[in-house]
Image 1 (cartoon, rainbow, N blue to C red):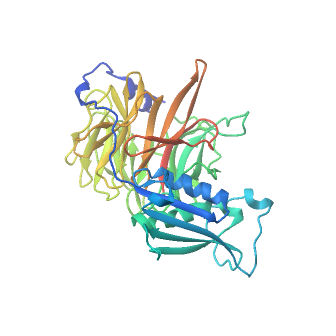
Image 2: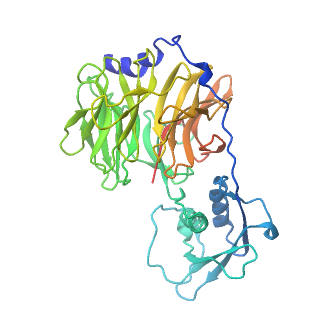
Image 3: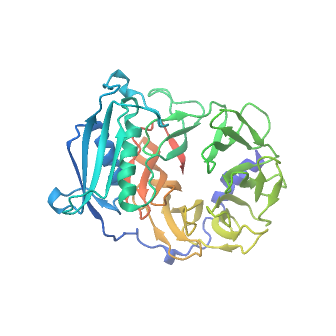
Length: 440
């Protein structure tokens, strides 16, 4: 276990009294923006369950919409009406509790929602559409309706069909799992699916850019070896196999664009370094080469920028570099707190969100790739870590450990906007949940 302990524990707590630049700490950020006054006229719809989902979805985009208004002052009016067609009428049944994330096609007749969007005082809609009401998939229907409204107004992509992968011990209410497993849920915590059933300690889940493969690291309790192996799970075929089992650590893997290669930490050489790994040929290519431990990489969506943690300054801090060679343009970009953890790129590649140990707890910070524009995202809100940007860059999922009472604390997943406003706790998740990674 020498490599495991040295990487995951010792590195995080060495030289904690070393220099930290407190002057770099700034107040929790506040955003300023102009929002669209949005009024949902649902008097002709009578679809309360679906409308609740639509409201919850659109309300997350506080930077875009204000739903607390009236029809007279709205800048965009959304008219919703329920239509019952003649063919194959569908009625609500006991199956309404069943959900499925994949859309069904080819439905004819039944019940539909028609949506029309009007600019203020306009008589002709600038957008109209209909959607089948699928009572066995109400949440998908609500997300789809919210997405059409959102995109027609903003011309931007949304998160309403996105997913979150995470680690949890959620079993039944009274008996947690002995070993934490990998789960996937909708972005809002509904439709939770268990993806692994394996003995050992699971670390660092990540999903490919096309959403078809999952990688994670495993400390396997069933063997006498001390290494951390890397596994890959095909989410379509459910085939789960070892991808890299070199001596030492095989951990922190993330997919490069194209999903043919990973970037990860390997320590088979005797020191933790960042490498590229070809999934098909298993060829490895070094990216760092330093006596200090380099771990926890994150790659920009363009595939040309890399950030990682390094103990080069005597404690784990964030370093940035180019992906074009070994130790190419390496520079330190973080100086806040006693040590840092889990740096993650925004989809644009311009910002990095990370956690920093400060005031005896983890808090989240954001910084530009050039090391400028440091801002604090959380404060006085438990201990916060493991951040991950949403696919559109507007939100961040993260793990927060809240103190419930002096004998109990709860670790679960929250959502915030990119400027640090806490939006919601994923109440549907059970057990102790951590390491969220957002994907399409």
